[in-house]
Length: 499
Image (cartoon, rainbow, N blue to C red; front, top):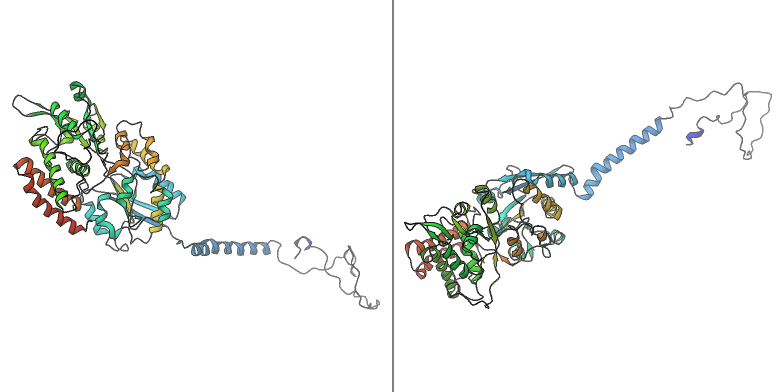
């Protein structure tokens, strides 16, 4: 209908004058002028009543609006496979409180309004066992995490609960190309990654700068250097009691991270304690004997000393092994302590730690220690696609930098980046640099400290601690303790199906 001409004259009608004979019907030629009628111009013909002009277009608008609503709310979500309601992802974290993640969570939710993140920081005690139990629950009844943090050494205990990282996600964030080698060695099983790292940490050698400079000592490059230098720095009072300890090694109860120390020496010595053969057992025995010597033979440490972290913070310890997060503890306990960090000592290639000190031209190992946490996705989650989308975002350089910056507002620095390409951005911090500089030569192990797992690490550490303390405190022959240690190790291997 031509709405512009809706007010034009009505079609012509027959005249009412009887004197005018009817004309024969014929086709009128086309004309630009409207046809005339029998009515004069002063008396316009009556018109039929019609609906208001706006009724028809308003009806069409309403119909179009309804059609668009159906398309947007029903057809598009149905075709794309996305539910029409908001999805909530339960994320169990550890160590980092929600305020540190608020920024990245808000950014992600703004870009993905159909996904909400329910992040909760869990308590470290019994976390592993609580997590294991919760993953077996019904999400319709209990809050079951879609995403959860776990230690890399826990993978054997969670293999049946982890959803493999999608190949597209692994490629997108560059797991093979831009992450430290240790992740590939630990997290890749049957050509698929089982978790994503958002951080890195390892083991470095902290030292008291005032004690080192006062004695004009050099920093140790080998374990024999450490043995000699720490012995020279050890001071006893007039009653023969330890006043200044050279290095916290030799015992387990008051040496924080003793299992990491033993773990890295085992790696450097080529000992694989999961293999029960004479060569590996001999290498394990040699490492335990060497470690205990720092208490029995070199006497750089004894049971009278407080925990090594406290002793170092109080200025009573020259050398101390620890991960990067212990820097925060030291700064809190003693802000004025003048300390620095360097890389851990090395062993000669294919040489036992009990052998004599090597000459300067002997090839040394370049093996360091990694102990880190990763994020996994529950393979029973109904929202695995959305969970991986969130973790893919958290793995971006932008998100990692935001989390690091947020953490740096409350402490010296955030979690060390897991990406190789981001390492240079942290190398300006002299206390972080030693960790980054050797990260691509780091290896992890099952003797990881402070994972609070009440499982694999805890059980193995107990057997190793019993062996070390038997040598150091009960003067047991190292060869005799191997029987019980080997039996304990084999039980753990069988229980957790270790390879």
